[in-house]
Length: 144
Length: 233
Image 1 (cartoon, rainbow over the protein chains, first blue to last red):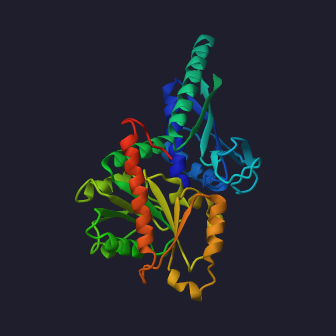
Image 2 (image 1 turned 180 degrees about the horizontal axis):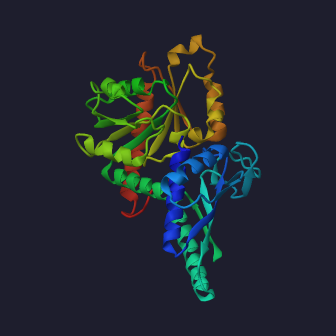
Image 3 (image 1 turned 90 degrees about the vertical axis):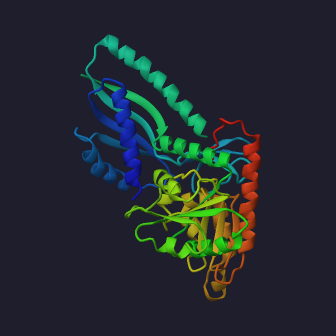
């Protein structure tokens, strides 16, 4: 049932992104999920279909859900690897203490938006967007 | 009309996690050690807390925030032993930080030695919600399967300690504590395991002593940290 809470967080982020720029319509939202994020793809999809019309006036965008394996880093030898099953063990040295890098949260990858703009203002958007990606990764770092 | 792709690459819970990290820091600064106690329904969280309340009585300032879908029955059970506030979620399957923060303001004081948050009985959803705790403890009762850790990997992965409850029933049930411990360690190799029986008052002192040590470590950390360091685990 916490899919609902995650979908509300997702839509909140999308709304902020849209309002930061003069975009018209959200066409597609791409998210990434993994074995340790505690959600099921089908349940996430149905929660999204239910909650989007509750919160938003505009028509529902396409939700693309990418499923990935767990990506981890060994805390002993530092090697990075993908985990086939939930076996927390370094493939290189056998160390069991590993840090999970990806696959433990619902990650908003990108949002496709339509925009009415001239070629000049599009260039401006691109500049702003790359700046925003830098800001986002900085926030991520501070959370680790 | 043209289409633009905005690259985001961010955890959808990033704001919540930041809020939880701030709350954790604020508790650390006030010396309040916070435990998030999780389990499936009926594992014995409330009974365990009753015994902890008795054990620490007069030695530490301890308060409990107890989450339930409905009723304040758990709070009523704990009230004779500890200051307690009930958090009623109205059917929601897990606690979230804002509700905890409201509960915090209803307690008779702000600063405690230990604040224990008894989460909703559920091994799935509470795993995804950081409440700003310093320690997550998962209770697993001997009347459940000893194969549960592997079935609920996120909960056991995000916990630092496991308390096996109702250990007095072990002679009568097929639960193997060693198997449960082994299964949990595949997912979380640093997990500390404790055996308790709240009814027979077994293992309570060992578990409480572990919590006291963890609190001491936190206090040590708060003395060495820069004031604006953010603690996020």
